[in-house]
Each structure stands twice: as C-alpha cells, then as structure tokens.
Length: 190
Image 1 (cartoon, rainbow, N blue to C red):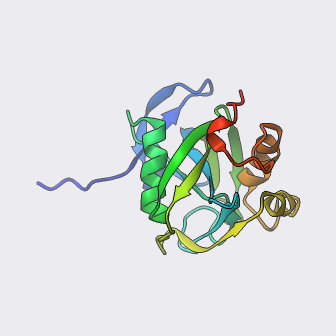
Image 2 (cartoon, helix red, strand yellow; image 1 turned 180 degrees about the horizontal axis):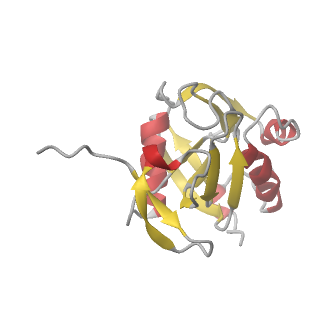
C-alpha cells in the first residue's frame, strides 16, 4: 500500500503551543486554524530586498506582491532549516546570514476569495547566495528593490500582502534596511 507523502503544518493553540498537525492542503480555507509559519526577506550583495509576486495558482493571496518567500516548518523541523529548505524549493537559492528578526510576529488576514491566513509567523532576514531560479508554481514575478521602495509599497494596501504591510514597519523599527546591510551584525528584536 502506497501512502501519499503530504506536507504537514503544525497546528497551534492561542498561546502558540503545538497541538497537532494537519495536511497543508487541508488547512487554508475560510476558517483556517492557527498554525506555525515563517516569512523571510532576502537581500542581495547591493543591499536590495527581494519582492516576489505569488503565482496565480496559489490557494491564498494569488497574484499578490509580498516579501521574498514564506513557508511552514514541518513537525519537529528546526525553523532555520525550514527557511533554508523553502529558499531552495521556492527560489532555487541558498541563503546565508539567516537571522530571526521578529520571533513573535502573528497575523490574521482574509483574501478576496475568503481564504484565511491565521499564523504565528516568525520573520527572518538573510542574504541570497547566487542567482535566483524561482519555481513557476510559487512565484510569477520578482524584483530586487531598495528598502525605501518596499517601505513605500506597504503604504498602498492594494499593492502588497497584508502580512508584509504589518511586517515592514516592525522591521524598520528593528533596524532592517537602514543601509547597513551586514545582516549578521544586526541585533535580534524581541
């Protein structure tokens, strides 16, 4: 008997404690349960940040511009390993200088079709190593932009994802994007 290999997400209670798992394909709907995820902002050698546009086939927020990439750690997967795995799977790139900047970020958002995102979503920054090779099923477009351009984009709520709108001001307050792009020297924000 062949059992289909399904990607699982970690379900959480309101306090952020793991309470089980569920197949990713079954989690995102009109009453999405709270679950664990992550967001990552990638920088290049010139200090620009990568924005991506979600593929039209994505279940939640298709076609929306957002941060570099997002994902879900698997059960018992170390978060940093999950971020690096997703960078390879979604963007075809390795990352370095990975650090968690917003460990307690949490959000709830509803897209135009009624699909809900309901996540505790630590936010990471990293530097991309090498050229991108985005997966078309994940990303339909991308652009490397100065941090100031991203800061402007989040003032236009129709132009970018609701989680990025909330994350960018918090990242600004944590010192991300100030022109000093030595990611490893920035302090973790609580």
